[in-house]
Amino acid sequence: MPEATVMTAADGIDATAKLASFMPNLILTDIIMPNMNGAEFVKYIRGTRRYAKTKVIAITGLHKEDSRVHDITAAGIEKMVYKPYDDDEMVSSIRETYESTDVR
Image (cartoon, rainbow, N blue to C red; front, side, top):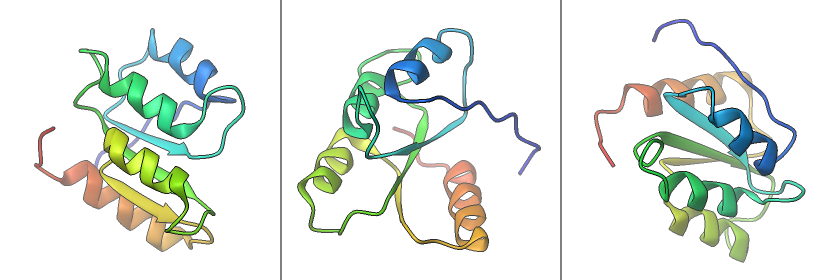
């Protein structure tokens, strides 16, 4: 896996604005964010030609049965990481998702 350039955003709206000048290979997003939640953000990504195939990992502290987990999964993510997680788990999730040859 190559070195990464990391860009952060305060919320989903901030992220959509930053995407205008940044083409990520992978996006990590929380489900619960102010102004635009993770599912809304992923729907935005999937609805744009430029980012439709960008791989997405969602992060959450919600229970697997929570409707918001279902919403973001239905929006089209590659992987869900549940909090609390350890660094090795996150690095492994990023590596596996980044290196996956699955194409959206």
